[in-house]
Image 1 (tube, rainbow, N blue to C red):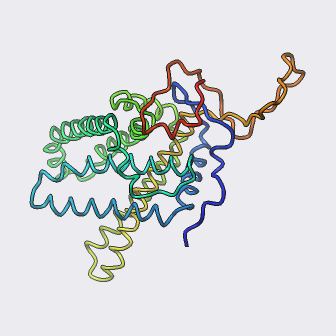
Image 2 (image 1 turned 30 degrees about the vertical axis):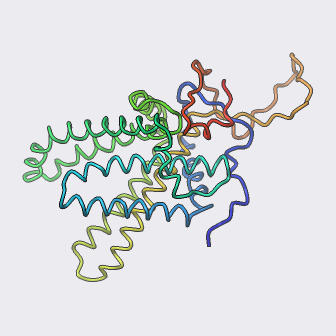
Length: 311
C-alpha cells in the first residue's frame, strides 16, 4: 500500500531564502539529495509510478505513430520537456502544500502564456543543439563505428557531460522562472560549482539507465522469458524517469535556496554584543552571496518561493 503523508520531509523546517547565484554545497550533500528524493517518492510511490506509466505510454504512442509519420518524432522532446516541468511542479506541490502528485500536474507548463513560451523556446534551443551537432557528426561517427566501435565512447562521454551541465535547466526554467537561455547558463554554473556533490546522483542515474538498456538488450536477443524481461525493462524506465526528476528537484532546492532557522514570534531581540554567538542550525549550509536582483514572479514558481524570503 502507498504510504500516507503523516510527516513533513523536514525540508521546510524554518524558512528559505532564494539565492541570486548557486551555492557551493559539500560533496556529501549528493547523498542527502538522493535520500530526499527517495522520501518524496516513497510518500506517494504509487502515484509517482502512475505518472511514470502515463508518460511511458505517451512516449510509446508517439514512437509508434512516428514509424509511419517521421515528423511526429519531433514531438517527443517537446512532450518530455512538458512532463519534466510537470514532475517538478508535482514535487514542489508535495513539499510545500503536502498534496499528492496528480495527473493535472503534468500539464502545469501549459497553465500560463509565459511558461508555454519558455517551453517552446527551451525545446527549440535543445532541438537546434541536438540536430546541429548530430547532423554534422553522424556520418563521421557511423564511419568510425564500422571500423572502431570503441570510437563511440567519445560522443557518449560528450552526451553525458551535456546531461550533467543541463541538469538544473528544467527546474530553473519552470520553477524559478528564468528564460531558457539564462537557465542554461545558470545550470552550467550550478553544475560546475557542485560536480562532486552531483557525482552520487550521476552514478545512480547511470546505473538505472544501464540496467534499463541491459534488460532491453536481453529482451531483444533472448528466446526465453520475453515477458519477464520486457516488464523489467519497462519498470526500470518508468522509475528512472520519475526518480531522476525528483533528484533534479531536491538538488535544485538545496543549491538555489538557503535554509534559515525557525524564528519565534514576539521573542526579545538578542543583545548586540553577545558573549557567545548562537550555534548554527544542523541543516544550515555555508553562507552564499546576498541576493542582488528581485525574485522572479513566474506563476509556476510561486509555490517554490512561497516561503522564500528575499535575502
